[in-house]
Image 1 (spheres, protein in one colour):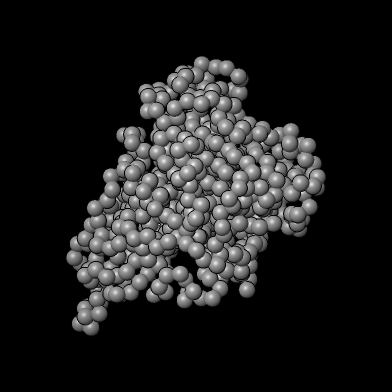
Image 2 (cartoon, helix red, strand yellow):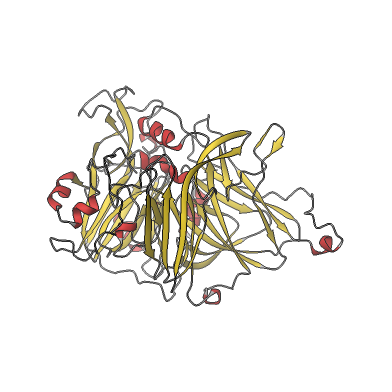
Length: 575
Ligand code: C2O
């Protein structure tokens, strides 16, 4: 195993899209940022040089950070942020994991432009993949192009004062030919393929705002992994991918040589804001034409590419089945599902309302008095007001202080009702139908090694969105999903305890539920949150704290010697 070293210089650069010069905060001048490519077991060292005007952390999405919670990159939870003009070096290893992960900023909405792929190849080389060895591996990062300042957009959504929306969807940073200005069309992503060859697409949804459907006209995909865990090969002509998820899929260039559109369409809840346009992006898969090259042409044919027929942008069923069709593949890295459960949580994901001024009651219908927040079991997350990151307080066992700041996330919602009854969707302006909500630093503490089962229940009162729930520091087994309300008597017998898919970001279907199990075996304080940027900024977050039982949390090593200090600037934008 070797050490793979990168330097990430984060700064604002001018980029021009849609006839407009925009200041984008990016790594090494690139959007998306550089891919980190490693071999399983390697150590990764990333020197982050913060030349941006923002406080910053980088999260290594899906890396388990075993006994290394310090490197998880959550501001004021695991570390002080890297202040402007400061540097910090992240060090971690990727033992026991292989496949496609990614990295992103974990401050405010900055991850929309500060992100990149993290690719972990097997130690024994590509021939040890549990699928035919691909000719080439291609990262496909679906993202968003934003003209609005990302911190302003986040703040506006939190406070409900501005309608923040992105301006285009992107594939590998390219907007594509559906976007134009002043008569010119934008370049799209171009993938050159050779007839008959097999390509491994490593697909990442780095967007803040939408799930996507991805299709390539005239081709099918064979899905072979998701969230850096192998799955039983599954052939489909459409991939559904929610923010935070990754999908590895084989693409065989077996169509008639030609040009084919690769299209990504955002999949949104049924009633989008009529103001928000459908921001589709497309690139082109192009067969190399040896004959034309021999004729001295060498240029791609100017034929109009073939278009795929896309699912409707409000089609939630295709995504439901795509996720439900993923099953785990038995493999040396593969773990068995624990058959017993130590702790059970039932977590509703909804929308609530709190008083802007923090008072305990106010007029719900008055927007200037109350505001909407995203909830778990009727709590919405509040970033703790601390001068030292919680993990440091915890590590140095100033534990009572930590404990006094936390509110236990209850193991079930305060009130049982028909969660998915559409009549619960408040008509027009939000009314008192929203759940009464408290704002607190919600957390759940687990004994190290505990087997935890969580059922996430989507609710109609979250304007019917799906929720990709991401747990830091752990992978989870996805046992079952369903539409409507979860019913243990009916649903537990349906659990897949044989070969469930293993994920770090779990898709909770719109108006449905998902049941997962995980082993809380990694001491630390871990974020658990929805990976939609706006749900995260509206408070759909809880802390999962894994403790080894001793008063001093001895199993965690000391923090890195060069760890950032918080200085006097605690004005960190949370999440
Ligand atoms: Cu990819 Cu806490 O996030």
